[in-house]
Amino acid sequence: MSVIGKIATLIKGSARELGESIVDANGVRIYEQEIRDAHDAITKAKTDLTGVMAKEMQSAREIERARSEIARLENLAIEALEKNKEDLAIEVADKVAEQESELEKQTRLHAEYALQANRLKDLIKVSEARIREHEREVQMAKTTESVYKATQTISESIGSSGSKLMSAKESLERIKKRHEDLADRMNAADALDKEFGTKALEAKLAEAGIGEDAQRKTKVMERIRARAAAEKT
Image (tube, rainbow, N blue to C red; front, top):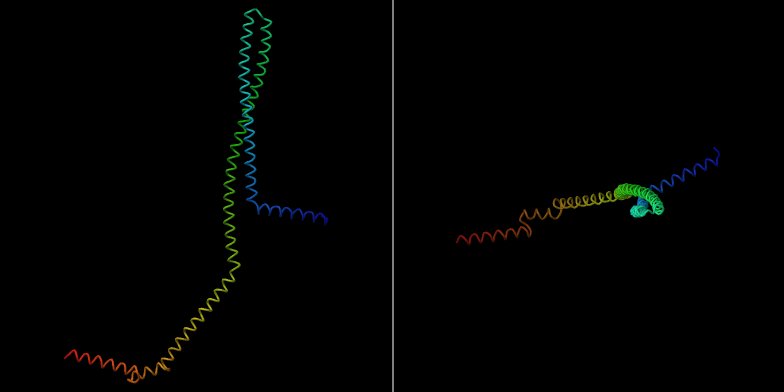
């Protein structure tokens, strides 16, 4: 294959892929447009049906008119024969023959119109049923597409923010660790202060009865003993 031929093939393939991608991307809208076109076609078919049915009614009236005219002319022909007007009767019979020919023509037209009307009715019924089915399918497709888009959005959101979420989680863990470390240091400082600091000394002084706390305890005990002695007397 020549270079030009290869390029032409490549262009055709790319155009086909582009066309298919456009159709796939706009599939639901194209489907809905086709359904609207089908509705328009059915509307036109119904208009055509009313025209055919009108002609069917007209041919039925023509049939009745021809039959009435034939009956009237035959009666006239009989009356002419009764009056020995055979030539006149033959002339009337010629008119009867013309009306019978018209009757046959209208009868054939009536049957043809009736056949066309029935075919159009059947076609419209089948087409409307198919359109309803397509409408259900396109509604389902739209619902499915919405679900897919929502799922894709969630997936992309989680995927794009995954590193951010992980970073935030790691930062939170570091903060918690610092808080725990600070709490441990405070507890350790308090323990050391109780064992070696001012609190430890004050505890020893109180135990030995020295200091404000020891005096306070002594005063409380003296007050309690005094009340107890008073209540005995």
